[in-house]
Amino acid sequence: MSDIYATPESDLALKIRSERGGGNIEDAIAGNIEVGMLQMLGEAWRDLKGFKLKCHIATVLWFVVYIVAVLISIPVVIGLSAAGADEGSAAIIASLVQVVAIAATMPMIVGITIMGIRHAQGKTVSAGTVFSYFHRIPGAILWYVLMTLMIMLGYILLILPGIYLTFAYMFSLPLMIEKDMTAWQALEVSRKAVTRIWFRATGFLLLVVLLMILGTIPLGIPLIWIVPWTALAYSMIYFKLFGAEAQTLAD
Image (tube, rainbow, N blue to C red):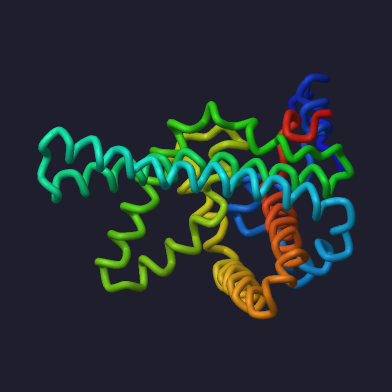
């Protein structure tokens, strides 16, 4: 029943709310959203048609950029060595360059998540979406550094906090980019929301890892289905918990 004494919402606010879909951050943090991981996997499997090829193209694009980013450290080492730097310093600098380069490819993974959200909602999907969030590279680098430091600190503090944070941060990257949050805000929102479903979320990620490992055994052929299937399921879980902004679903 509506509250007749509540402050009327503007037409714009109602329009924005109607254009958003799925869950919302407040309910996710409060634990008011029930998410069945096996149910999400089942829905993703049934909705896989039309997503596989585009997901594979996007994944290949990401992988190529990732390899190039990793290889960036090689000319850095060669250049530093030619300049007379000692091997230890060159290795440290090259490692830092590699970390930054790898973190810079992370927005492309969010692009795949956005593709999954759009596909599940019946929107047009393009593999080129992986290139849509490069402007968030500085934030992705900060996110990567903060997350790594927090998880490392957790492992130093009796290991269990590190295990907890490893899984609790599973939605932090798409939250930062899709919701336009700061790196720290995204880490905290993900942690608080996943805490409510930590065992189920952890089970989902471990199952994904197991499926990926098993999928590589028969010449990797099952990965043709496993990669887009699990990527789509992850997108659906994110959408179920946090919803998607109007610009994410816009055509």
